[in-house]
Length: 244
Image 1 (cartoon, rainbow, N blue to C red):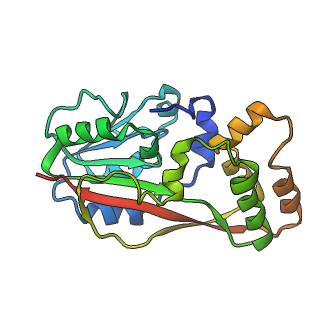
Image 2: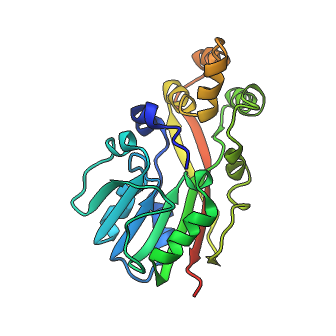
């Protein structure tokens, strides 16, 4: 698993979109027991905190200690630095395993082997993510699309394609459940939009090789745009039961 976010862990926590309780409730529809859940690749706990009220205990793991240090405290949540593909979790102990906006960085074969080891026979696995941001302001949206598809072309890690393909092309060796189409909706200031774009891994790669600020056209356009900005993210969600 790659660690691209430790160096900007606070910015990541503050600027990344939060998940909706609607996503959690959709996943929980498929989970028969709620004793022990594992949120893998938890980062700063954006998704972990939504699971906490529904389980007796939640384990949140990540390879980035810096990210986990930004996570909120809950009595029933333990944060541990562990790789997704090899953990100390007891066999067949988990009711739910979740991965939010991280599975595309994993070694699929090794990770799924670990999931099948730790899930209960009726346990559930859910891969959650969000796709490319859409800004209702057409002019700003065009600039964001240009940044994503043109300026940063060649700077995205190859794993990013799984998000562009809406997680439909990731291996998924589970009894897949039907889920509805979901979206995340926010009203952001221009500064919030810029802060979010600064968390893009490709932007970091671009800045390592160029002196030009690729966000300048968007920054200038935002000065003339009305606030708040309506922004939407398509939710990527795949839910499956463990295959016996």
